[in-house]
Length: 252
Image (cartoon, rainbow, N blue to C red; front, side, top):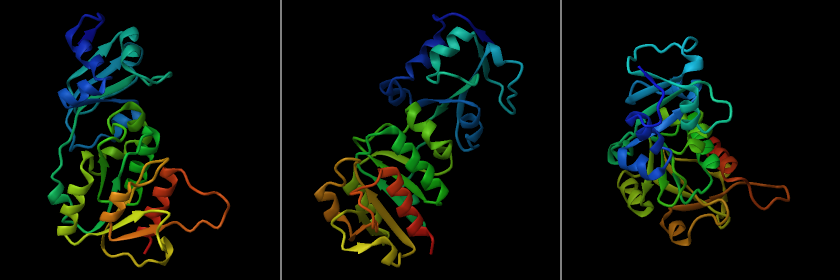
């Protein structure tokens, strides 16, 4: 099938997915580029794959029949990258059972009001690299399904549970019932990360880029901890800080 008209219903519905309101309403999102599409695991439902007319003879799609070719003009209207790779997919959002997820042993990451989609995506990528069991993203954070966030995850969002729009207090209460120890990254912490022997079930709360965690969120943690920094800088980029935390929490 080939689409050349901007009035085509499939094209119009896909174009709307650039807006978070329609992503939420339709429970769908757009994935751009060869690597990102390749990373979509078999546990995710791909509704549609689009290929630009320019790339229709060079991109091979296996085990998927619902492929639509778009004119170059229409394809460029759907993607946000300046140098598109000729392929994109419409994917259904995944729903997770939080109570089931937190029964497992390992590391859980909880993010409060992470505003920058690049930082959010990088943290998700690091969580995948350090084998975190799940990432929980609070209401008020950047959208995990925006193009900028997805690009920064480098496909990692398809390889671990990422649960968005959570209520932090409710989530922590569920975790505490499963005997998960809650740590919060805070400059108020009296212990450094490298001085702690972490339990097998642990969660880290990491806060906003500029303001850190809310005081009421810190109060919900079992312990406040901080990163040892002998240099003169007062703070780290939140994605870098989160990566250091995950390394320290998993290296033993």
